[in-house]
Amino acid sequence: VLAHAQDTTERERADALLQQAIARASHGAQQLLMLATLEGAETPAARRVDVAQLVRELLAQAAPSAMQRGMDLSLDAPDALWAAVDEPAFQSIVVNLVDNAIRYGREGGTVLVKLATDGERLALQVRDDGPGIPAADQSLVFERFHRVAGTQAAGSGLGLAIVRQAAQRMGGRAGIGKGLAGRGVGLDVDLPLAEF
Image 1: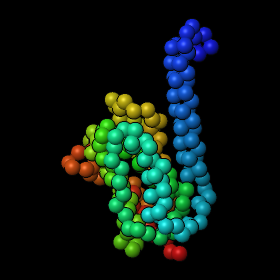
Image 2: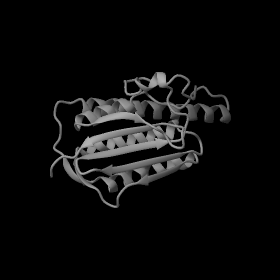
Image 3: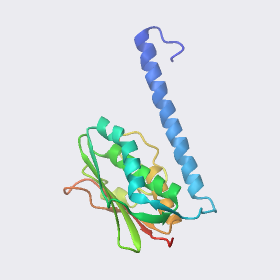
Image 4: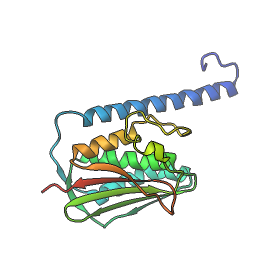
C-alpha cells in the first residue's frame, strides 16, 4: 500500500499503519521468546537484588506510556527491599503486569504498584481502577492467547501467561485480586524469599 500510495496523505497513513504492524509483530515475538525462555529447563541462580529499586526503574520506563494515557502511576514500597530473585523472571512479571494495567486500564485512571514482604514471602500487587475483568474471564486470563471479549487495546494475550510462568518458575503463584475504589482489577504475585 505504501509503495502504491498516490499522494502524501495516503503515503503517511500507510506508513503509520506499517509502523503499527511492525511494533505489534515485534512485541508478539518478544513475548513468545520470553515465554519460551521461562519454560526452559534451566533456572538461573537467584541473585541478590534491591527489588524496590528495580521496580522503581521499571516504572520509570513505563511512565511515558502512562502519561500518554493521562494515568497516575505510583508505587507503594519500602525505600529498599533486598531479596534473592531470578532477576529476568521478576522483571518480566513487573513489566507485563504494569503494561497490562496501563494498556487495559481507563484513560485518566490510576495504577498502583505495591511491593511488600513478611520476611518469608515477597508480594507484588498491581491495582487499577479501569473496567476490570468479567467474572467469566477471570479463570482464563492467565492462559496463553486469551483476550477478554470486546477488548479494544492491541495485545497478544501472552502477558499474563508470562506472569504466571515466571511466578511458577520462582516457586510462587499469580492470581487476581480487587482493583481500586471498588472497580478495576488487581493482579497479585506471591513469591517465596530465597536464602542469600
